[in-house]
Figure 1 (tube, rainbow, N blue to C red):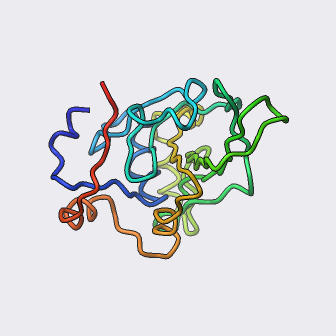
Figure 2 (cartoon, rainbow, N blue to C red; figure 1 turned 60 degrees about the vertical axis):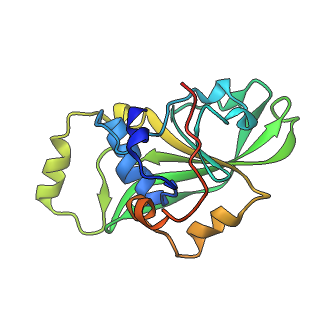
Length: 199
């Protein structure tokens, strides 16, 4: 997490769905460094959402972290239930990932109480990237990659927030997204600070 100390004052981390997958998750799955290297790795089943302070990267009312893909999304005091259909995330005309949405329920599975906690879980698409106009050369280049489908999909990146505070969610839905690099330079006059995980 040393790279975080080199960020300018007032840095705010508000990546789009595309940026989370292309600039962070894909690099994590490929064993490449993420820049800025500020998103920590957590085990999802060891943390309830209200315990993410100091563990995940906090920006506003949202928390970000990498985790291993798992079928069981239970935690010490509840579980994450999927809602809605998976969304395709696209970049440059290509399908690059999936966005899954979950609601946190406190208590036992199938008997829990619904909370306001929401999680967006981002996955890489199995195998090669799916493009609307792919050529044979691009297919060959994808086949040369050294990582298998299982390796690529062993990682996910998560965004967790409370739905009752939706101002920052609408920031992405209204088509006013800025890249994370744009945010570095354009938000220098903003006094909201990124809360970094404790070491």
